[in-house]
Image (cartoon, rainbow, N blue to C red; front, side):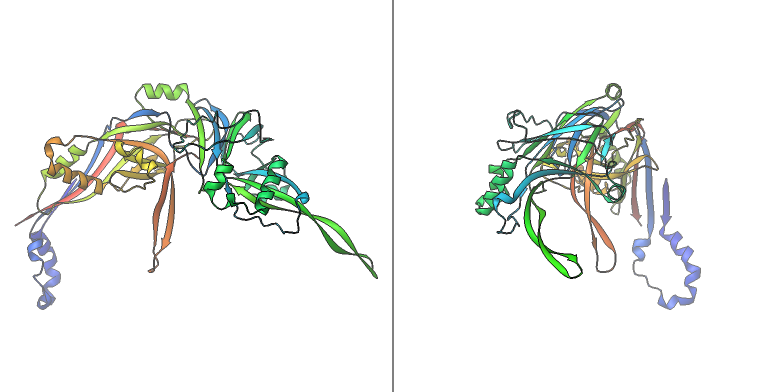
Length: 474
């Protein structure tokens, strides 16, 4: 679609309304208004030649820890375990009057937000916890094999559980935002922590020194199938008791003081963003997804698995712009729309909420260097469930950069740019401005691990909306 407006036509249309105030009429800017302005809006439906690509391993470091085993006919099999370092408290808030003999136990508590799971919350599960005996590798990824990092004969803790509060009373069931999985740790470990804190051991001064003494935990699914849960926190509590005298009224004229036992606890260890947590993910795609990939379909799955690569016709867009290029040509916007097709399943699996699009040379370095989308080599968008569409609406800066590269060296300029699409979790922060408006900033982008997702992208019917204007001066 093209719209053309000439400077002469604009002046004629405005003349009747200006007759009564000719004394105030200015000729400033008249030379700019003289000429033809062409606004071009190209809506191109094109085949971006997308294809599914299998990613064998990826960066799985995150504060969300996946645990469980799940098989979905349309999706495949997903088995998740995790390793995590622990952050120690700088001091132990227990009164000095409490002796070591009053320490009762130490417990590990894993918390799962209600509803943060895929599968059956009532499926019986069992987990095992092992104490890691050496430092975790710095280049850890989703295919990390913990063999050799723990002693399989020394189980630190074990627990049978379901990811549900249905067995609790009505008040707890209605008000609890988490499903907690408590388990006993060896009492000797609790006493050892108690002694070290009482002795002001320097091991607690820095996370690095503490992790040298206690490298972390490995948690695996020991029994059960049908559920994968998101564990938001892992905490270790030390429990102790103390004697206290309370007054008891025996009758209206007599008061007695009796000894009672009070129990208390303190959190000494916890998983935290400051220390390493990484998921060990083993995902095998279903026969359906493998068939779709072999047929050339564009697939995206999480956690891990398939990503989609495609070829973006950047040279074709630049040629279109340069056909009408003048001294006053301006690129207004460049938008890419990709239709999405949900893969039918009985587990309520939906397309990923956010997709990241990066150039191929940015695909790995983007996460490794903790980058955020810059709308030049990396972009992100949110899934439009109503229109079943992913829309990348801020690609103008990218095309301007490519235009500069083309003008500098047109002979070595490639026709297409290869991009990669993959699901991500996006963290944002909203800041209130002094004039009342708010601005939202993207603070972090990481591979999406919160739940299994899958989607087929219709790259054959992608739409590119390109808007630019040009003016010829008289």
